[in-house]
Length: 404
Image (cartoon, rainbow, N blue to C red; front, side):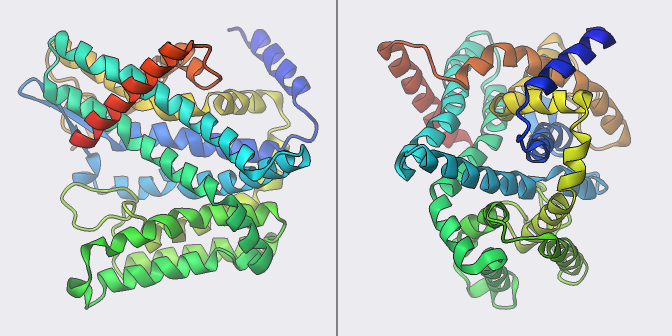
Protein backbone atom coordinates (compact mmCIF):
# COMPACT_ATOMS: atom_id res chain seq x y z
CA UNK A 1 0.00 0.00 0.00
CA UNK A 2 1.41 3.39 -0.99
CA UNK A 3 1.80 6.20 1.51
CA UNK A 4 -0.96 8.21 -0.20
CA UNK A 5 -3.40 5.30 -0.07
CA UNK A 6 -2.52 4.69 3.57
CA UNK A 7 -3.16 8.32 4.42
CA UNK A 8 -6.43 8.23 2.50
CA UNK A 9 -7.59 5.08 4.33
CA UNK A 10 -6.62 6.57 7.68
CA UNK A 11 -8.53 9.76 6.88
CA UNK A 12 -11.67 7.80 5.93
CA UNK A 13 -11.54 5.75 9.14
CA UNK A 14 -11.02 8.90 11.21
CA UNK A 15 -13.94 10.64 9.50
CA UNK A 16 -16.25 7.68 10.24
CA UNK A 17 -15.28 7.60 13.92
CA UNK A 18 -17.99 9.14 16.14
CA UNK A 19 -16.89 12.36 17.81
CA UNK A 20 -17.70 10.97 21.25
CA UNK A 21 -15.64 7.80 20.76
CA UNK A 22 -13.25 7.26 23.67
CA UNK A 23 -10.08 6.90 21.63
CA UNK A 24 -7.84 6.69 24.68
CA UNK A 25 -9.69 3.63 25.92
CA UNK A 26 -9.39 1.99 22.49
CA UNK A 27 -5.69 2.84 22.45
CA UNK A 28 -5.11 1.30 25.85
CA UNK A 29 -7.04 -1.81 24.81
CA UNK A 30 -4.98 -2.14 21.63
CA UNK A 31 -1.73 -1.76 23.59
CA UNK A 32 -2.74 -4.42 26.12
CA UNK A 33 -3.87 -6.76 23.34
CA UNK A 34 -0.67 -6.43 21.33
CA UNK A 35 1.37 -7.14 24.44
CA UNK A 36 -0.16 -10.65 24.53
CA UNK A 37 1.29 -11.99 21.25
CA UNK A 38 4.54 -10.05 21.58
CA UNK A 39 4.96 -11.38 25.12
CA UNK A 40 4.25 -14.97 24.13
CA UNK A 41 6.44 -14.76 21.04
CA UNK A 42 9.39 -13.33 22.99
CA UNK A 43 9.04 -15.20 26.29
CA UNK A 44 8.10 -18.56 24.82
CA UNK A 45 10.64 -20.68 23.00
CA UNK A 46 10.61 -24.06 21.31
CA UNK A 47 13.33 -26.67 21.08
CA UNK A 48 13.66 -29.60 18.70
CA UNK A 49 14.77 -32.87 20.27
CA UNK A 50 14.38 -36.32 18.79
CA UNK A 51 12.26 -34.84 16.03
CA UNK A 52 9.75 -33.49 18.57
CA UNK A 53 9.03 -29.84 19.37
CA UNK A 54 9.08 -28.99 23.08
CA UNK A 55 8.16 -25.81 24.91
CA UNK A 56 11.08 -23.92 26.42
CA UNK A 57 11.44 -20.57 28.13
CA UNK A 58 14.28 -18.05 27.74
CA UNK A 59 13.52 -16.95 31.30
CA UNK A 60 15.18 -20.12 32.59
CA UNK A 61 18.57 -19.05 31.18
CA UNK A 62 18.36 -15.34 30.38
CA UNK A 63 17.75 -13.39 33.56
CA UNK A 64 17.51 -10.04 31.77
CA UNK A 65 14.19 -11.18 30.31
CA UNK A 66 12.52 -10.88 33.73
CA UNK A 67 12.32 -7.05 33.69
CA UNK A 68 11.06 -7.29 30.11
CA UNK A 69 8.05 -9.20 31.44
CA UNK A 70 7.07 -6.15 33.50
CA UNK A 71 6.29 -4.23 30.34
CA UNK A 72 4.83 -7.14 28.41
CA UNK A 73 2.49 -8.27 31.16
CA UNK A 74 -0.22 -5.63 30.73
CA UNK A 75 -3.07 -7.59 32.26
CA UNK A 76 -3.67 -4.76 34.71
CA UNK A 77 -4.47 -2.42 31.80
CA UNK A 78 -6.38 -5.20 30.03
CA UNK A 79 -8.74 -5.70 32.96
CA UNK A 80 -8.89 -1.95 33.71
CA UNK A 81 -10.23 -1.29 30.22
CA UNK A 82 -12.49 -4.34 30.51
CA UNK A 83 -14.09 -3.07 33.70
CA UNK A 84 -14.55 0.43 32.30
CA UNK A 85 -16.05 -0.88 29.04
CA UNK A 86 -18.39 -3.28 30.83
CA UNK A 87 -19.90 -0.48 32.91
CA UNK A 88 -20.49 1.67 29.86
CA UNK A 89 -21.93 -1.27 27.91
CA UNK A 90 -24.25 -2.20 30.77
CA UNK A 91 -25.45 1.40 31.04
CA UNK A 92 -26.23 1.51 27.31
CA UNK A 93 -28.08 -1.81 27.51
CA UNK A 94 -30.21 -0.62 30.40
CA UNK A 95 -30.95 2.63 28.58
CA UNK A 96 -32.36 0.52 25.71
CA UNK A 97 -34.54 -1.32 28.20
CA UNK A 98 -32.50 -4.54 28.22
CA UNK A 99 -32.04 -6.44 31.46
CA UNK A 100 -28.76 -7.43 33.05
CA UNK A 101 -29.21 -11.08 32.03
CA UNK A 102 -29.79 -10.09 28.40
CA UNK A 103 -26.66 -7.93 28.49
CA UNK A 104 -24.64 -10.73 30.04
CA UNK A 105 -25.91 -13.24 27.49
CA UNK A 106 -24.79 -11.00 24.64
CA UNK A 107 -21.34 -10.45 26.15
CA UNK A 108 -20.94 -14.18 26.77
CA UNK A 109 -21.81 -15.11 23.20
CA UNK A 110 -19.36 -12.55 21.79
CA UNK A 111 -16.58 -13.89 23.99
CA UNK A 112 -17.23 -17.59 23.42
CA UNK A 113 -17.77 -17.62 19.64
CA UNK A 114 -14.07 -17.10 18.78
CA UNK A 115 -12.98 -19.59 21.46
CA UNK A 116 -15.33 -22.24 20.10
CA UNK A 117 -14.01 -21.48 16.63
CA UNK A 118 -10.33 -22.03 17.45
CA UNK A 119 -11.18 -25.11 19.52
CA UNK A 120 -13.23 -26.62 16.70
CA UNK A 121 -10.48 -26.01 14.13
CA UNK A 122 -7.85 -27.53 16.41
CA UNK A 123 -10.08 -30.56 17.01
CA UNK A 124 -9.74 -31.20 13.28
CA UNK A 125 -6.06 -30.27 13.13
CA UNK A 126 -4.96 -32.74 15.81
CA UNK A 127 -5.84 -35.96 13.93
CA UNK A 128 -4.88 -34.34 10.63
CA UNK A 129 -1.38 -33.46 11.86
CA UNK A 130 -0.88 -36.96 13.23
CA UNK A 131 -2.12 -38.42 9.93
CA UNK A 132 0.52 -36.32 8.17
CA UNK A 133 3.22 -37.85 10.36
CA UNK A 134 3.68 -35.09 12.91
CA UNK A 135 4.85 -36.68 16.19
CA UNK A 136 2.28 -36.81 18.99
CA UNK A 137 4.65 -34.86 21.24
CA UNK A 138 4.80 -32.02 18.72
CA UNK A 139 1.00 -31.99 18.44
CA UNK A 140 0.76 -31.91 22.23
CA UNK A 141 3.12 -28.93 22.34
CA UNK A 142 0.92 -27.04 19.89
CA UNK A 143 -2.15 -27.77 21.99
CA UNK A 144 -0.48 -26.38 25.10
CA UNK A 145 0.49 -23.22 23.24
CA UNK A 146 -3.06 -22.67 21.99
CA UNK A 147 -4.66 -23.23 25.40
CA UNK A 148 -2.25 -20.91 27.26
CA UNK A 149 -4.03 -17.62 26.43
CA UNK A 150 -7.56 -19.04 26.28
CA UNK A 151 -7.94 -19.44 30.02
CA UNK A 152 -7.90 -15.63 30.33
CA UNK A 153 -11.15 -15.61 28.38
CA UNK A 154 -12.66 -17.75 31.13
CA UNK A 155 -11.34 -15.36 33.77
CA UNK A 156 -12.67 -12.35 31.87
CA UNK A 157 -16.06 -13.99 31.42
CA UNK A 158 -16.23 -14.71 35.15
CA UNK A 159 -15.42 -11.08 35.95
CA UNK A 160 -18.04 -9.93 33.46
CA UNK A 161 -20.73 -11.87 35.30
CA UNK A 162 -19.70 -10.06 38.49
CA UNK A 163 -20.00 -6.59 36.92
CA UNK A 164 -23.25 -5.63 38.75
CA UNK A 165 -21.58 -6.45 42.08
CA UNK A 166 -18.49 -4.45 41.10
CA UNK A 167 -20.76 -1.52 40.23
CA UNK A 168 -22.44 -1.79 43.63
CA UNK A 169 -19.04 -1.93 45.36
CA UNK A 170 -17.91 1.15 43.45
CA UNK A 171 -21.00 3.08 44.53
CA UNK A 172 -20.48 2.14 48.16
CA UNK A 173 -16.69 2.38 48.46
CA UNK A 174 -15.76 4.66 45.58
CA UNK A 175 -12.12 4.59 44.58
CA UNK A 176 -11.34 2.27 47.50
CA UNK A 177 -13.53 -0.55 46.17
CA UNK A 178 -10.45 -2.46 44.98
CA UNK A 179 -8.66 -2.16 48.34
CA UNK A 180 -10.31 -5.27 49.92
CA UNK A 181 -9.15 -7.29 46.91
CA UNK A 182 -5.59 -6.11 47.42
CA UNK A 183 -5.85 -6.92 51.13
CA UNK A 184 -7.13 -10.43 50.42
CA UNK A 185 -4.21 -11.22 48.11
CA UNK A 186 -1.75 -9.75 50.60
CA UNK A 187 -3.16 -11.94 53.39
CA UNK A 188 -3.04 -15.10 51.27
CA UNK A 189 0.56 -14.34 50.25
CA UNK A 190 1.48 -13.79 53.89
CA UNK A 191 0.04 -17.18 54.79
CA UNK A 192 1.58 -19.12 51.91
CA UNK A 193 5.03 -17.47 51.99
CA UNK A 194 5.45 -16.71 55.71
CA UNK A 195 7.21 -18.89 58.29
CA UNK A 196 4.05 -20.94 58.74
CA UNK A 197 3.82 -21.78 55.01
CA UNK A 198 4.41 -25.51 55.52
CA UNK A 199 1.31 -25.76 57.66
CA UNK A 200 -0.92 -24.14 55.01
CA UNK A 201 -3.06 -26.28 52.66
CA UNK A 202 -1.91 -26.51 49.04
CA UNK A 203 -5.18 -25.08 47.73
CA UNK A 204 -4.77 -21.80 49.64
CA UNK A 205 -3.11 -20.08 46.68
CA UNK A 206 -6.27 -20.58 44.61
CA UNK A 207 -8.05 -18.07 46.84
CA UNK A 208 -6.11 -15.37 44.96
CA UNK A 209 -7.64 -16.22 41.59
CA UNK A 210 -10.75 -14.06 41.82
CA UNK A 211 -9.50 -11.07 43.88
CA UNK A 212 -6.17 -11.09 42.06
CA UNK A 213 -7.61 -10.67 38.58
CA UNK A 214 -10.62 -8.64 39.74
CA UNK A 215 -8.36 -5.90 41.13
CA UNK A 216 -7.75 -4.19 37.78
CA UNK A 217 -11.33 -4.84 36.67
CA UNK A 218 -12.74 -3.16 39.78
CA UNK A 219 -10.43 -0.19 39.24
CA UNK A 220 -11.89 0.11 35.75
CA UNK A 221 -15.44 0.00 37.11
CA UNK A 222 -14.71 2.70 39.69
CA UNK A 223 -12.93 4.78 37.05
CA UNK A 224 -15.96 4.59 34.75
CA UNK A 225 -18.15 5.72 37.65
CA UNK A 226 -15.99 8.81 38.08
CA UNK A 227 -14.83 7.68 41.52
CA UNK A 228 -11.09 7.76 40.71
CA UNK A 229 -9.66 11.13 39.73
CA UNK A 230 -6.12 12.30 39.06
CA UNK A 231 -5.22 12.24 42.75
CA UNK A 232 -6.35 8.63 42.99
CA UNK A 233 -4.47 7.77 39.82
CA UNK A 234 -1.26 9.27 41.25
CA UNK A 235 -1.79 7.25 44.42
CA UNK A 236 -2.08 4.08 42.34
CA UNK A 237 1.02 4.94 40.32
CA UNK A 238 3.26 5.85 43.25
CA UNK A 239 1.83 3.35 45.73
CA UNK A 240 1.94 0.50 43.25
CA UNK A 241 5.50 1.38 42.27
CA UNK A 242 6.67 1.56 45.87
CA UNK A 243 4.99 -1.73 46.77
CA UNK A 244 6.49 -3.37 43.69
CA UNK A 245 10.03 -2.34 44.70
CA UNK A 246 9.55 -3.45 48.31
CA UNK A 247 8.20 -6.86 47.30
CA UNK A 248 11.13 -7.41 44.95
CA UNK A 249 13.98 -6.14 47.13
CA UNK A 250 12.77 -6.84 50.65
CA UNK A 251 10.46 -9.84 50.34
CA UNK A 252 12.31 -11.40 47.39
CA UNK A 253 9.36 -12.10 45.13
CA UNK A 254 10.35 -13.70 41.79
CA UNK A 255 11.28 -10.98 39.33
CA UNK A 256 9.47 -12.52 36.37
CA UNK A 257 5.77 -11.84 35.98
CA UNK A 258 5.30 -15.21 34.27
CA UNK A 259 6.27 -18.68 35.38
CA UNK A 260 9.89 -19.77 35.00
CA UNK A 261 10.69 -23.48 34.59
CA UNK A 262 12.48 -24.79 37.66
CA UNK A 263 11.35 -22.00 39.98
CA UNK A 264 9.23 -23.05 42.94
CA UNK A 265 7.33 -19.76 43.16
CA UNK A 266 5.42 -18.03 40.40
CA UNK A 267 3.68 -14.68 40.30
CA UNK A 268 0.89 -15.30 37.81
CA UNK A 269 -0.63 -18.71 38.51
CA UNK A 270 -2.40 -17.67 40.66
CA UNK A 271 -1.63 -13.93 40.86
CA UNK A 272 0.61 -12.83 43.69
CA UNK A 273 0.72 -9.44 45.39
CA UNK A 274 3.48 -8.42 42.97
CA UNK A 275 1.03 -8.76 40.07
CA UNK A 276 -1.39 -6.40 41.81
CA UNK A 277 1.39 -3.91 42.59
CA UNK A 278 2.34 -3.84 38.90
CA UNK A 279 -1.33 -3.56 37.93
CA UNK A 280 -1.78 -0.57 40.26
CA UNK A 281 1.25 1.14 38.74
CA UNK A 282 0.08 0.45 35.17
CA UNK A 283 -3.51 1.49 35.86
CA UNK A 284 -2.44 4.71 37.55
CA UNK A 285 -0.23 5.57 34.58
CA UNK A 286 -3.03 4.76 32.12
CA UNK A 287 -5.47 7.03 33.96
CA UNK A 288 -2.98 9.90 34.11
CA UNK A 289 -2.07 9.58 30.43
CA UNK A 290 -5.63 9.26 29.19
CA UNK A 291 -6.01 12.80 27.83
CA UNK A 292 -2.59 12.76 26.21
CA UNK A 293 -3.32 9.42 24.53
CA UNK A 294 -6.66 10.75 23.28
CA UNK A 295 -4.94 13.78 21.71
CA UNK A 296 -2.33 11.61 20.00
CA UNK A 297 -5.00 9.33 18.56
CA UNK A 298 -6.70 12.28 16.89
CA UNK A 299 -4.00 11.82 14.24
CA UNK A 300 -5.47 9.54 11.55
CA UNK A 301 -2.27 7.56 10.95
CA UNK A 302 -2.04 6.70 14.65
CA UNK A 303 -5.75 5.99 14.97
CA UNK A 304 -5.91 3.57 12.02
CA UNK A 305 -3.83 0.73 13.60
CA UNK A 306 -5.76 1.11 16.85
CA UNK A 307 -9.01 0.53 14.96
CA UNK A 308 -7.56 -2.48 13.12
CA UNK A 309 -6.31 -4.08 16.34
CA UNK A 310 -9.59 -3.53 18.17
CA UNK A 311 -11.60 -4.99 15.29
CA UNK A 312 -9.33 -8.05 15.32
CA UNK A 313 -9.01 -8.33 19.10
CA UNK A 314 -10.34 -11.85 19.61
CA UNK A 315 -8.65 -13.15 16.47
CA UNK A 316 -5.29 -11.89 17.73
CA UNK A 317 -5.93 -13.31 21.18
CA UNK A 318 -7.08 -16.75 20.05
CA UNK A 319 -4.79 -17.40 17.08
CA UNK A 320 -1.39 -15.79 17.75
CA UNK A 321 0.07 -18.95 19.26
CA UNK A 322 -1.13 -20.97 16.26
CA UNK A 323 0.78 -18.54 14.03
CA UNK A 324 4.05 -19.05 15.89
CA UNK A 325 3.53 -22.80 16.09
CA UNK A 326 2.84 -23.01 12.35
CA UNK A 327 6.16 -21.39 11.52
CA UNK A 328 8.10 -23.55 14.00
CA UNK A 329 6.34 -26.73 12.86
CA UNK A 330 7.14 -26.00 9.21
CA UNK A 331 10.80 -25.39 10.08
CA UNK A 332 11.01 -28.60 12.11
CA UNK A 333 9.52 -30.64 9.27
CA UNK A 334 11.88 -29.16 6.71
CA UNK A 335 14.79 -30.38 8.79
CA UNK A 336 17.37 -29.16 11.25
CA UNK A 337 17.39 -26.74 14.14
CA UNK A 338 16.62 -23.15 13.15
CA UNK A 339 18.15 -20.36 15.30
CA UNK A 340 15.54 -18.42 17.24
CA UNK A 341 12.83 -20.85 16.24
CA UNK A 342 13.66 -24.43 17.21
CA UNK A 343 16.94 -23.95 19.10
CA UNK A 344 17.38 -23.61 22.86
CA UNK A 345 16.49 -20.08 24.05
CA UNK A 346 19.66 -19.63 26.11
CA UNK A 347 21.78 -16.99 24.39
CA UNK A 348 21.77 -13.44 23.07
CA UNK A 349 21.97 -14.96 19.60
CA UNK A 350 18.62 -16.64 20.17
CA UNK A 351 17.13 -13.28 21.19
CA UNK A 352 18.35 -11.57 18.01
CA UNK A 353 17.14 -14.43 15.85
CA UNK A 354 13.74 -14.50 17.57
CA UNK A 355 13.33 -10.75 16.99
CA UNK A 356 13.95 -11.39 13.31
CA UNK A 357 11.17 -13.99 13.27
CA UNK A 358 8.53 -11.70 14.80
CA UNK A 359 7.48 -10.05 11.51
CA UNK A 360 6.87 -13.47 9.96
CA UNK A 361 4.76 -14.50 12.97
CA UNK A 362 2.75 -11.34 12.43
CA UNK A 363 2.26 -12.00 8.72
CA UNK A 364 1.12 -15.57 9.38
CA UNK A 365 -1.30 -14.31 12.04
CA UNK A 366 -2.69 -11.79 9.55
CA UNK A 367 -3.15 -14.57 6.98
CA UNK A 368 -4.93 -16.78 9.52
CA UNK A 369 -7.03 -13.82 10.60
CA UNK A 370 -8.47 -13.35 7.11
CA UNK A 371 -10.40 -16.59 7.65
CA UNK A 372 -10.59 -16.82 11.45
CA UNK A 373 -12.31 -13.44 11.89
CA UNK A 374 -15.56 -15.00 10.69
CA UNK A 375 -15.71 -16.76 14.09
CA UNK A 376 -15.93 -13.37 15.86
CA UNK A 377 -19.31 -12.41 14.40
CA UNK A 378 -22.58 -14.35 14.24
CA UNK A 379 -22.10 -17.76 12.64
CA UNK A 380 -24.12 -18.19 9.47
CA UNK A 381 -24.27 -21.95 9.98
CA UNK A 382 -27.17 -24.34 9.96
CA UNK A 383 -28.15 -26.18 13.12
CA UNK A 384 -26.36 -29.48 12.38
CA UNK A 385 -23.16 -27.65 11.39
CA UNK A 386 -23.24 -25.56 14.57
CA UNK A 387 -23.79 -28.73 16.59
CA UNK A 388 -20.82 -30.39 14.88
CA UNK A 389 -18.62 -27.37 15.59
CA UNK A 390 -19.69 -27.43 19.24
CA UNK A 391 -18.98 -31.14 19.51
CA UNK A 392 -15.54 -30.66 17.94
CA UNK A 393 -14.77 -27.85 20.38
CA UNK A 394 -15.82 -30.09 23.27
CA UNK A 395 -13.52 -32.87 22.02
CA UNK A 396 -10.63 -30.43 21.85
CA UNK A 397 -11.38 -29.28 25.41
CA UNK A 398 -11.27 -32.88 26.64
CA UNK A 399 -7.98 -33.50 24.82
CA UNK A 400 -6.52 -30.25 26.12
CA UNK A 401 -7.41 -31.06 29.73
CA UNK A 402 -5.48 -34.27 29.36
CA UNK A 403 -2.26 -32.67 28.11
CA UNK A 404 -2.08 -29.20 29.69
